[in-house]
Length: 634
Image 1 (spheres, rainbow, N blue to C red):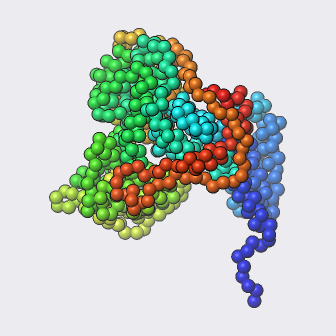
Image 2: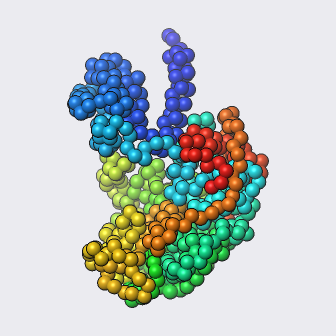
Image 3: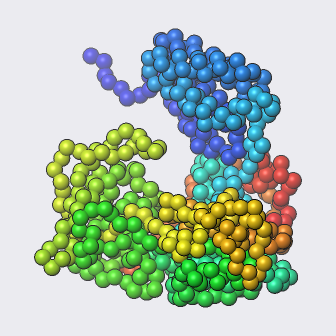
C-alpha cells in the first residue's frame, strides 16, 4: 500500500504557488489611477489561464473575451465589438460548468456596467477618461492628500520639525493622525510588491514624539484680509477649516457647544488611545496659526445661527455627529442602558465611569464598540462582552482594535442580534436578550445575517452600552432653511450648503456682510465633515475642513497659496532587499488594561530608520517623476 503524502503533486506546484503569491501581492498593490479596462483585462487573463479545458465556453470563450477586450483597451474597437463582448460574456456566464468560467464572465459584465463611461471614452475618443493615470498611492489614498514620502524622508534625515510641518501643509492634526488614523495611505503602498506596506503611521508617530506639534512654529500667515469666517463646531473638520483660513489671513471665530475643543477626538476616543495632552498639542498648534477666536460652551440654535450668517462673511458648519443612535427594542429606557457616545462624551470631560463588580455588554462591531469595551475593562468591570449580529470577520472595527480588546479580556459574542433588554423590579438593567443568527447571502458587499432556528439567549448585564452608530442634530439648521436628508445636512460638491427654501438666480450672488437676506439667497454657508457625510473617520473630517477652507477663500474673492518652506531631501537609491515591517509596540495587556495611560510605545531610532529606508520614494520614482519633480519644495 502506497504511503500518503502531503507534498505537492510536482515540484512545479510549489514554484507556481510562489509565483501566485507574488501575483497576489501585485493585485493587492494595484495603484490608484489604473485604467479600469486594463484592470479588467488582467483579471480576465487570469481566468483564462486557470481553465481546465474541459468545457468549451470556458476553454474557448475566455480567450476570445480576452482578445476582444484587448481591442477595446487599445482603443481599436467599434461598437459592434463591444456588443459581441457582452453577448459572448453572457453566453460564458450562463453555460460554463464551473466558477472559473462563469465568475470570470460575470465579473466582466459587472465591469462593463460599472465602467460604462470608460468604455464609451475608449470607443468615441480613443483615450481613457480625463483623470485616469497613476499617481503616488499613499498621497492619493490619504483623504487629505498628505505628502507621505516627503515627511518620511525628512524623518530619515532627523528633521522632525520639518516632517511635522510637511504634514501640516495638508493636515493640522499630525499627532491625532499619528495615533488614531486608520492609515488608508498604507493600503496600496508599492512596498507590498517587495514585502509589506511601510508603517507610515508609525513613522509619523515617531516624528511627533520627537517634535510635539505645539513646539513647531506653523507656516507663515498671509496678510490680514479683514474678512471674517465663523466655524460652527470645534472638532477636527471645524478646526482644520479654521487653521487654513487663519493662515490665509482671514479672521476666524470658532463656536463650540462643549467646554473644550476637539470634538469626537476628545469626546469619542478614549485617552488610552489618544492621550488628552497629545490632542492639546495639536490644538495649541492650530490656535497659534493666526487670528482665531474660540468661544466654547456656546450651543448654537436657529436664532444664533441666523445672526452669525448675517454677521460673518462666510460660515462653515461642522457640528459632527454627536448623538448616539438607539436600538428599537424593548427595555431601552432601563437604568444602566446608555449610548456609547454618551459614555465617551463624559470621559472627554474627565467623568470616568465606575463599573467595579459589574457585567458590561457592548452592542456593536465598530471601533467605537471596541473603545467602549476596552474602557469598561479599565473602569473595573468583572466581565465585558461585545455582542454583534454578524461574524467576527465582518466587524468594521480595525482588526488590531479587536485583537487588543480580546487580549485585554473582552469576549466577542458574534451572530447574536439584540431583541430586548430585561429589567429588574427596580427598573435596572438585568440582561440582554438576543436571537442567534446564521450568516446568509451577500448584500451590500458583505454576508448578511438572518435569524437562526435556535432559542433566544439571555446574557446577564448590569450595564448595556449601545454602539450602533451616531446621528446628526440637524434641527437648528433645518429651522434656518438648510436642506437635510437621511439625517445629514446637504451640500454640493464644493461643500456649499443646499437650502430647502429654493435655489433661484439670486442664490449665486455673494451676500454682503451685515445683510440677512431670504434663505434662498444665503450663499455664504458651507457644510462639511460628519454632519454632511454621516459618521466617518477623523482624516475624512480633516479633509473636508481643508476643502471648505479653500472654497471659502475662493468665495471671498481670493486664491491664496500657502507656503510650507520645507525642503524635501533628494531621494536615495531604493533598498530592494525584503525586510519585515516594524510595528508600533504596545504595553502588555495585563498592565495597560489597569489604567487609561497611552497604550502605544515609541519606536527606536533604529526601527524608524529601517522603516524610512523601506519607502520607495514614489514621489520621485514612477508616477511622481511625471508630476514635474516635486522633490525640492512642497
